[in-house]
Length: 366
Image (cartoon, rainbow, N blue to C red; front, side, top):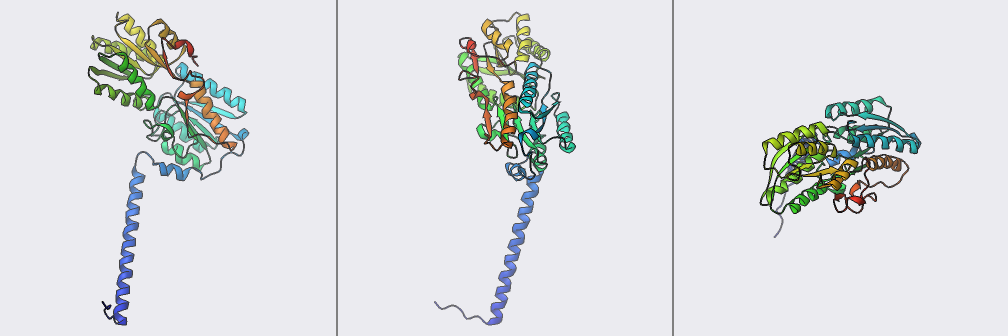
């Protein structure tokens, strides 16, 4: 078929129409892009892309000896944190780098203010961070810090909504590395052990750390597995500040309200001490099984004695050393893994789960 004849003036009108339509489509695309950007900016947790864009906007230290590290601890109130801080000081001394310690006091806003102040002070070119609320400090660590040439390693608790992610997905772009051993899969294995040990089912209480703590989030998410198994029921949940007195108080309340309780799970040995005291004082030793997460000297001894069913090992010294070493390795141009998995540490006998049969093969760090 022959094409229709078109006059020159009609051709020009057609061309102008096509140009107009292209401009309208371009404007529409631009408008949509702006809307998407506006929506992304409004999100409470920065995206992975945001972290990537900000990762290298300023130059960091030239050599390891130039490192001036601000170490943000979640707190200083228990043996775990104290062991970590002692390891941080020793590691920084061995590396010949500066280190200042900040006590977050398990207060998310206080730690946020500490990090913000450190950012504006100009005193530091590296942060090692144990976050109380990984979402609250997300933009500070993945956008503002890199823009100022400040390197960031995160340990113990993931940031930016990554609390329940696994493997390399626990690492947030814009940071050097994430070091941890309390990932969701470890909590899932812990819950699976309780299910295996109690084939007839159990009434279970969960006692954990602070609400916004990533380890609490993983613990509570993993515990949802109980509802899928006949005879298992979570009858109580309480959050604490990880201390022995709070653990004791929470256990007393739970025991009084649940005379038929079978199991208490505690995700920190400091709390477990208070829980054991409460169970023994209530005359329910041997009737209520206590599962511990922490692996300190007291916990391993208590597993041997039968006060605890088992304990999951934590390595506060190695955790801190790895976080600081990662900063030094990055400056030295060495490849640093996105995720350093403490459950695969050579300090452990192939597993982080210490039972009565295997407890003699474990060595506590605190």
